[in-house]
Image 1 (cartoon, rainbow, N blue to C red):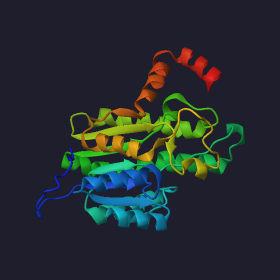
Image 2: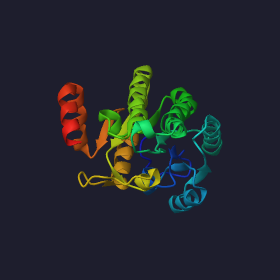
Image 3: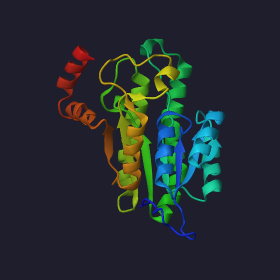
Image 4: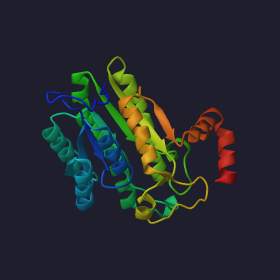
Length: 262
């Protein structure tokens, strides 16, 4: 298990490597800043916006790795570049993601494909490429950024919710396979987060409550999962776990409430 490096580590200490996707903005940027504040880590930062990514890398002391995760070839290039730059990946934080909002019957086919590619397929393939090294070394952390939408479903976000729900099942399945190893898989599922996400999807956040939480709050949860976690799921804010549990325990009651109150 990668532990938080001590600030007083000597020159011979091998610093663990963290790879963060979606690091050019939003949650990924906040995660990069959180690891940089801890000191002792080598940061590999992936993103599609080269200019913004370079700025984040300069600010955090990380290495920028430009990547478009919309195609498998881009994922494979990122994994190869990360392993070449860091020699290993001790922690993977899969924070890259995109959204789309509107009635499913009006959703263009290309947007369906893009959401599934970036939010799900890219994550699965990137884990496939870095996980073997973790297993061989006997330690590692995989932290996936889910969403409350993946636990309870959200009106007008059917495909987005489906991609995030699939990550939860993927993480559970990996945990069973990795039992007995020191490689852990965690899912951090936020609600609304104060990032450019809503602007980029073209539909603003529509509710007064709950208010979006700062990205730094999600980054703190990622940090705990990466450094001290035991491979569990967490919600940000924590109270979002209640509706997720209600849906699991009493799905009929939950759906009736969701239809009525949204």
